[in-house]
Image (tube, rainbow, N blue to C red; front, side, top):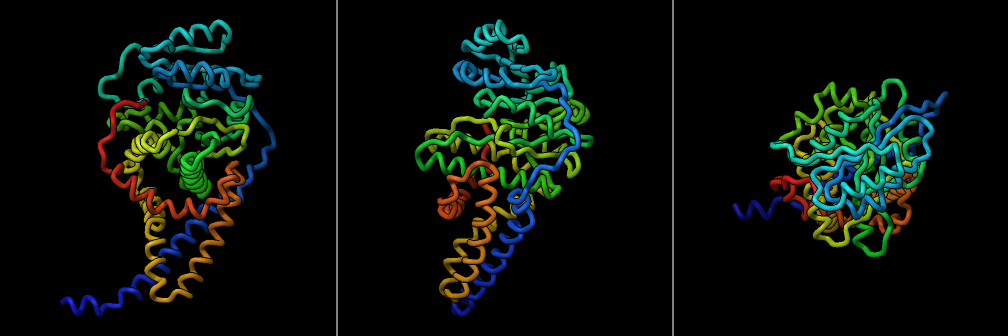
Length: 376
């Protein structure tokens, strides 16, 4: 038995699998990711200014609200709009701070929640209350630790709506800062956006990010809000979009004026805890989405180990296949990073691509780890 094992042509098998994995990678880059790389917004014959309700949920966020909330309150949007801040049982000075803001900004609507909802973990309860209190059909969501990049955020996000569109996906990058960790976090954010934007453009929308997301109240109430997701700590953004988004009712916006910016975590431990919460929702995605995302992640994880093994079989063929994938990936990454304003990451993309192998090793445990019940 041992002799049979060692006589098996393992290197040849590894090389064949390496070729197949490379084809899988090229499929994702050629079929999905090129759509964002070459995306240009569709031309519109006319532009409407829909009434908009901006909703921000906050829990003990006084320190951030004092610097970030004005960005939402001073938007240059001539049509009817409001900014709703849901103060979810804060124990700091959030209530007093919001009262002070209200004296200056009459369009600020404050919703104070004094208790948690039993059996509904995460941000879904305060967000639901905010949507119910909203005066207008279009709601635009962001977080208390985010600030719009420009005063045209509302204007350009709502401009993506046209007949048939119920969901608009935006981009929320982290601020550029010194250090490798900042680049790793920003690459992760870019890589996630590359996937959910490209999949949406391919007619397979599967998630959105609550830091910059818009949809209509009608689709929220028609799907009974978050009632099907109340057992999950997260999911107020990605799982809800996974449920309601279709190939015809979803649009994307990547105009830099529509970005919402936030500060990246300063330590790896903080980032790990943040990412761990995000990954606990992936197992609830639709089967097709799990298959597509799982296939892509598996191909990334296996690519470099199989490349290393294939070098022992035929280093010339292995390097030729690697070079073809490398050049095509570099081309797609370059265009996509420029589309999302992350050009400074491109010189390091090859190193960050290798990092993805270790990334999946580190975060694999989060797929079955029991999530925390709070949303902060």
